Amino acid sequence: MVTAMQSIPFSEARAHLAETLRLVESSQNPLLISRRGQDVGVLMSIEQYQQLATSPSSFSARLNQWRTTYAQSGLNDDPFNNVRDTSKGREFSW
Image 1 (cartoon, rainbow, N blue to C red):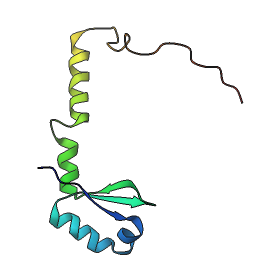
Image 2 (image 1 turned 180 degrees about the vertical axis):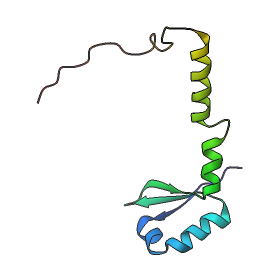
Image 3 (image 1 turned 30 degrees about the horizontal axis):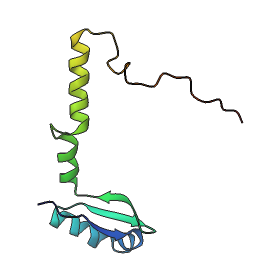
Image 4 (image 1 turned 45 degrees about the horizontal axis):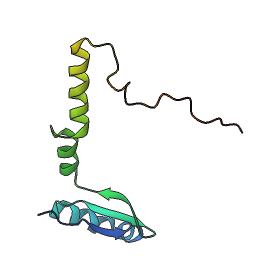
């Protein structure tokens, strides 16, 4: 079951930073930080961050794996050439 992340205003997080950090560490749940009603950041424990950054299923891990596989394949063609928009684009001047 996925639960919605809790969100607190930036001013509250700043005013009670030590308490907010303790909450994140003890609950092991990331905390959204909002400004003017919009979520703008995430506070998480270092353990969560390290797990996210080094997880074999993380985007960066999969991208690095793909790059290694692609580089070892000996292919020189960019596999994304057929999906990129190669048009010149619109004219722009200052």
